[in-house]
Length: 274
Length: 265
View 1 (tube, each protein chain N blue to C red):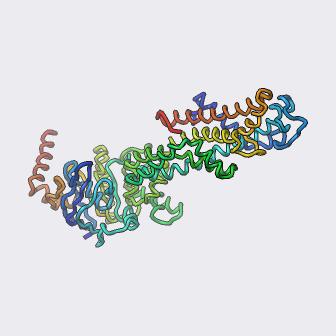
View 2: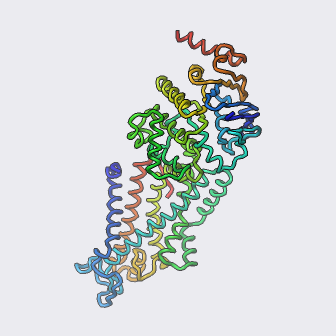
View 3: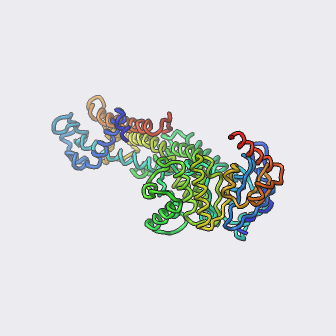
């Protein structure tokens, strides 16, 4: 961990992700206004001391909305990636451990999933279902587990030949025990790194979906739908576009730098599939 | 008779051909005795060891023929559940390389208690107590520290002792030691052999001791079986082995041993 802090860029990532978490957790105490409070006569005010990020078409305080938006982006990032890692670990470890035909079938399924342009798959799935935060998290999760599956499979392929796996097998450990207690803990490093990078991707996907109007539904604020609402007044009210855009940019950058930093610290291996 | 192997034949599959690693061997083991299996590299010693626990991966090879009767039951007919109960509890293994036989992400204590939990329903405190007992039985000193140490913090001999503690924590009947001292330096080798002999006497353990070092074998074995190219060419008591070898290959092995002594002198 100390190594992560020594790396300046990774430190930046830690600070970004850390402050995002603090902002999200303490949103009700930090936000100066109720994010849903409509005040038509204060609509489209430019940034000032009262409203430091200005107000939108309905006179809502953009700063407060963005602080609550941080919650959405944090929760979606973590839960979606959590689902993806969970599915990926199951499929990848079964494929890697049992090998043979099971491996072929599962890995061809992974290849098939990777053939879909995932964003359009997500669009199609969400168009079919009702867009709400739960559905969005699940859909992002079930369309982004393939990288994890490949990583853990590759780790397990080499780990399962190691003698301590043989040793636990000869001492009577079941397959499930060997996978969960011995193989996954040894191979989890690169998966965690790719998961952090995956959070960045999930944040971007959520913003894009919300921007297209099929993500987080108004009035719930998310950075993506603040952007979408700002699109109408593009060129007039710069703060409705620039500020949420910057927030997304810095957050994604933060996760990516953190992921890179972790990789340099733990891996030494060159590339991870996000 | 504790273990009877009858007409065992094991094949390994490669891309284009099948290799017979063990070719119709017969072997008997008595309770509380040490049977040494000696022979050159790749003659099928380890394959026999793995076959006894039915540990040959179906992707690599197959037991094509024969019976392995352990305590009156044919191991070939056991279900995977029964096999899991057999492995570790009644038949236990230790391997050549203690450094790679221990999982690097867990402490020694965690690994032994994990094994205990895998086979029995006991509380954490009981598991720890049993693990400590096991470490003490393996004649480790400073067991509190070793219990909390990761494998890389221990020396080779300590690791092998920890491995032995793990393998004997359930007081098995049969211990299969596949070249347990080959990776250790000579002074430690002798200590590990002493430990195995002590465990044999204390627990009534039967040991299948696989080695290629005939000097070492003479210190521990009651009976010696010589393997050559997948076949057992000679089985005899230790005394007659060194004084009166019958098979040509055995004579050759002993001759090389004498040659080595000459060179040392």
